[in-house]
Image (cartoon, rainbow over all chains, first blue to last red; front, side):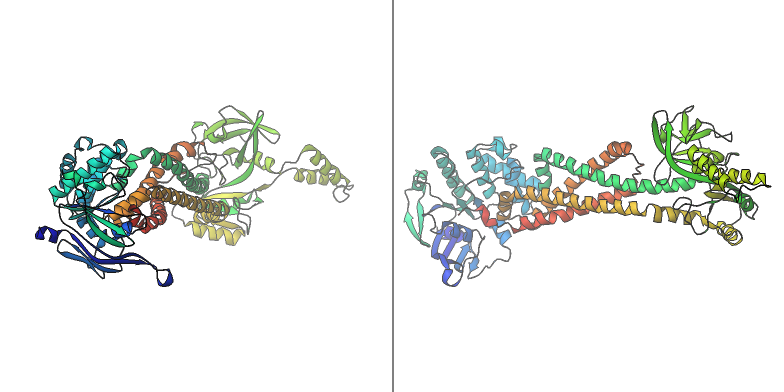
Length: 239
Length: 401
C-alpha cells in the first residue's frame, strides 16, 4: 500500500490566491489530499468552495500560489512549477474527463481516443491499437467508426474516459462526469471509472455534486471555504 | 499524426465548398481584371503587329496616330519611299466611329489603307474569309468581332461599302474591331461635311471678293475644289529594307523631312505607357481593392470557423496539443479555402467571365501562377487573426467553474 501511495498523487498545503491587495481572494487555503493508484475518490463541495480551482491547479492549468504537489515520485510543484513543459505534463501524466464529453466532432471515436497518443509521438497504428483496446474494455468498440454526434450521452462519456486513459496517466481528473446522465448511466460511468482505476493503476479524482453517485466513493474529500476535509464514504460501487 | 484540418474540412465539406465557391467568384473577378489589362496590352501590340510597319511617320511633335491627332500631307509617302533603307511606305488613316448596318450600328475603328498588293503596310496581314480590297472605292474588310459577314452592306457617312473579306484580332488599342476601307474613302469620311455645310461654305467663298473677282474665273473653282477635298492622312507606315537599321532610317527622316518618326519600341511605349496607362491604373486599383476584400472575407470566414471551435480548441490545449498543431490546423484550413477559391475562380474566369466580357480578356498562365501565390499568401495572412484568437484560448475554459 505504501508503494502504491507513492505512485499516486499527493497534495500538501496547496494555496491559491486570486488578485492582489484588498481585492485578493483566497480560493484554496492549504489543501491536503492524497489519492493512491487504483483508487477513485470524490471531491465534493458547494458552489464557490474551490473545487474548480483545485482541479485547475491539479491539472496544471493555473499555477497555485504555494504548496507542494507530487505525481508518482515526481514533485511537479513546490512553491513553483518544477516541470519545464506543463503541456507535456498534462498530455503524458494527467487524464481529463469533463462534464460534457467535449469530443472532437470531426474525428471518429477511434481517432478521438488515439489523437492524444499520437500527440506523444506514437505511430498512428500503435495509437489506434491502444484506442481499440480501451474501446473494447469500455464496451464501445462497436461504435469505433462513428462520429461523436452519432453516439448516446453514455457512449460519449465512455469514449472520453478512453481518451483520458490512452496515455496510461498516473492520475485522471473527472469534472462532474455524470452530470448530464440519468442515475443508471451515472452509476455505470462510476463503475467503469473504478474498473479502469484498478486495471490501469490510475488515481482518479471525481469532482461532483451528484447525490446519486456520492455513496459509491470509499473516500470523499469535502472542500469548504478553500480547505479539504477527508471522510470515509460508503463505497457501494464495489459491493 | 492525423490531419485535423483535413478531417474538419471533410466533416463540414459543404460549408467549405460553398464558402470556397463564393470566394472563388471574387478571385475569378480578380483574375479577369488582370486578364482585361493583359488584353488591353495585347490589343495595343496586335495593333502595331498587324500594321506591318517598322516606322510610324507622323506630324511633327505629336504622339500620333494612336495617342494624339496627326495630319500630314498625303503625298509625303513618296518622298519617304525614296529615302535610303525604305522598302515600302504607305499612307494610313484611323477614324473611330459608328458604322451602320441596316438599323444597327457597331463601334469600329475605320482604317484607310492604300490599295496595292498584299504586304502593303496597314493591310490586314491575313483573312479568315473572302479577299483583300482590290478596288479604290466602296469595298471593306471587317474584323469578325464587328459581326459583319461577307457580302454585308455597311454605311460609313453617306457611302455604302460591301464587305469583301473578314479578318480576326484586328482591333484598336481600345479594343474596337477594325473595318478597312480604301484610303481615299477614309480621307473623305474623315473630313466630309454635310451638304448644308458645303453649301454654306461655297456661298461664303463665292461672296468673298478675294476669291471671286473679275478676270480670274478659275480661282473660285480652285478654292472651292480645295475646300471639298482632304489632302491629309494620319501617318505614313514604313517598312525597312533588310540590312538597314530602323533607328538610322528614322533619324534620316526626322532630319530631312522635319517629321516625327517612331520605331516599334517607341510606339509600344506610347501605347502601353501613355494611351492605356490610366486604364491600367484603374484596373490596378480594382485589383488592390478586390485583393483586400478577398483577404477580409477569408479572415472573417476563418475567424468565424475558429470561434465556432473554441471549446474544442480549449480541450485540445488542455489535453496537451501543441500550439503549432492548432495553428497548423487553422492555417491549413485557410489555405484549403484559398485553393478551393482559386480553382473555382480560375474556372469561372476562363469559362464564364472571359468569353462573355465585351473586351478581349487574356488570361496568362504566369498571371494564374502569381494569382495562386497571392491567394495563398493572402490566406496565410488572413489566418493570423484566427490563429491569434485560438492561441489565446485558455485551456481552463474546458474545465467548468
